[in-house]
Length: 121
Figure 1 (cartoon, rainbow, N blue to C red):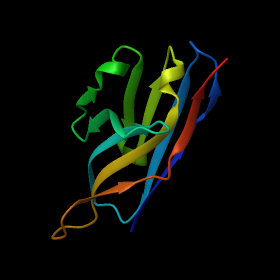
Figure 2 (cartoon, rainbow, N blue to C red; figure 1 turned 180 degrees about the horizontal axis):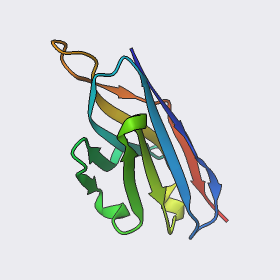
Figure 3 (tube, rainbow, N blue to C red; figure 1 turned 180 degrees about the vertical axis):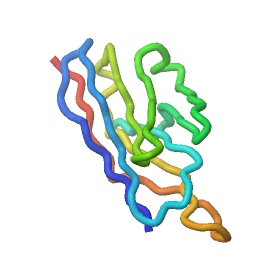
């Protein structure tokens, strides 16, 4: 099995910064992509940023220029640096990964348990 563990959430004032981390562990042959999603109370989960194994990144419009996704392949870890945070960024942030556990078994995606980010003065 594969486990994703997020960390780095917390309370921050508007305009502040946080860095989230997500470490994947378990039976991992390859990770095709890692993503950050978020879900605010009463809203649907939405995609925030994607990092592929080839290093390509993609961002939702509402975080472009403020958030940066990066990764450490050797550690199977992805990060989300969040700058210029706004109250509307308040949400539970979830890590997602497309993981190939071994050759011959289809890749599947896994989710972390989420980490709360609260932006408030």
